[in-house]
Image (cartoon, rainbow, N blue to C red; front, side, top):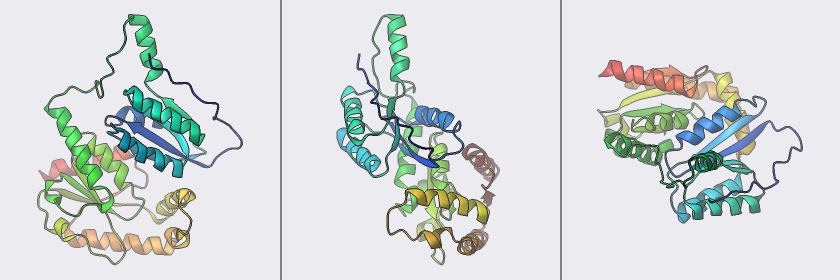
Length: 284
């Protein structure tokens, strides 16, 4: 059995007011997100900055992920069944001095001991390889490719497009929806800028604007800049008057295009997704 020895790097020097949580999965990442959030919610004094890396299945992909972790050290949780990739994660995490846990390994060890037979170690074995499974993977691939306005074409293929200013939970909401087989793109609204013409002309997708209160955006942005690189203009990013103008611009843009809006101020990702799906159901 492939064993993972946890290095003695879990030092508790002083309380942290934020931390990076890196979730590496060779599948959709649902198991990790559930485990990571169940644990992090128990530490409400520390703001979690969550990074999800789904469908990591070769050394090249994993090397890029580990480089990203090196730039923002934190707790690493992973579900990777390939022993070679698991060893690569363990080795690099030890070198970086960051804590890491193979989430499924202790559970698999118990099953193996009790059943008296080794696991088959199949990637994504918890998913039935049927049309529904491939629909979810296709949705996740589309969503990752269209995160934060990375691709400004083929919006007509999307089921849902989320728009909003920075820190309105567009990316995590998009990933949550994608994990349910819904192709979701998200596009940032930038003060004074127009939205992509391909989005304006798209007929098929439901476009939804995500908004929040000025105070909520400022709070989230303040937490976010803790991990920002040097040279980042933090003052303008968290200025409440600037945020208020951004929100005003976003609302006017949504009204002009007749896009429904959802206030995410007091909503969890799950609640926001449910509200979006309700809108989609009424739009059909």
